[in-house]
Length: 369
Image (cartoon, rainbow, N blue to C red; front, side, top):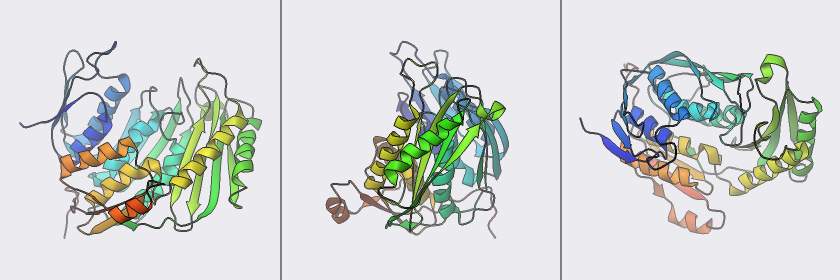
């Protein structure tokens, strides 16, 4: 059997997710071979177990040292799945991969994921719910069966959070053209406080509103006070801010307090609110028709969509997105056209317009009449 060869641990999720969609077998070697602790990390092994649960017939072989993985993807089965995510990474580390795969499963996916819901490494579950899911909805064409519910919040180091994610499966995705993001219409915030003073959430929200009110009149922050079991196993607080434009584009950013067991200074609620507001203003300045954290999802769904032209404009590209585009070409043979004139005109802001013709990727599990 022919394998696509990779080395190192970088972009581990993306390689395996694209391999699952394309049906190509991959071999990843020299994983942290020269590190003090070589081989796969605990959260990467947990991710492999999740892929086993949502597929049927997947074969995974890990060598004795853990520095070499052979992955032969099976068929996406979906259905009811429960998974305990390793607390080294947030639940969204696993959820982002499911968002790439869920639309093409045999049965609608109903996943229960447990672990860390908010941290300063991965996007929060609130950002995914209010920014990523609306983007996925545009490709699916209907929101029936698409939902993300935060049952419990969980912070580092012990987690204890839980979310319920459901997604319908489709035979094909719609093409999409999103170029003009439009002006900001409103800003909403979700300030949460787990096992700390109830006033903490209000302090974060008011601090963020004080800055954002200078730019947008419609600013409102909700407070989510998580007590008892709903607050997970570790104390902490944070905020997610979502800006929506008149054309329905949503930008999301989030910040979270430092973990209780870290060597960093204790976080101050007012500082967190100011930091979140400034991050949102930076995200709005970068612009584009998708949020920075959603660039790779949008480009992949454009590639897999109906055999028609799709076009989106992004803000400044992250190294993550640049590498992801290369992997899309490797696994699916799709190249994006970058509009040169628009790139040069928006060079200061780094805006790029991507255009491609979808490959008409079909869900093999859905019968076509």
